Image (cartoon, rainbow, N blue to C red; front, side):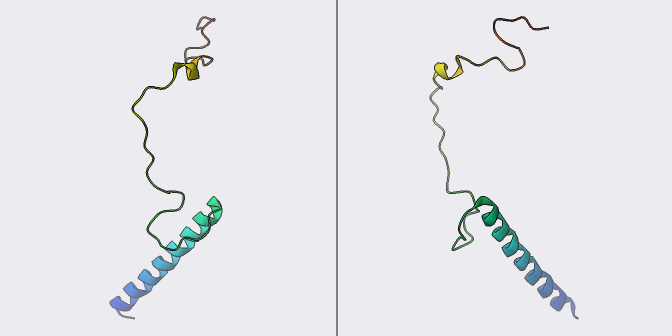
Length: 75
């Protein structure tokens, strides 16, 4: 085989491997096969995160991580 034949064989094998990995990712994620290869599996688009602060009521029952509970002293 010539060098060009070897490179073509490697390229075909890499393409086949890429297709198989994409199939496995879709199967693992439970998604139907995609029509194109533009969007990776599991990514439907960008998600915007607002700059507004979180509601402080979300943290009312939480303990400070690493500092222990509020009503007890740290060791």
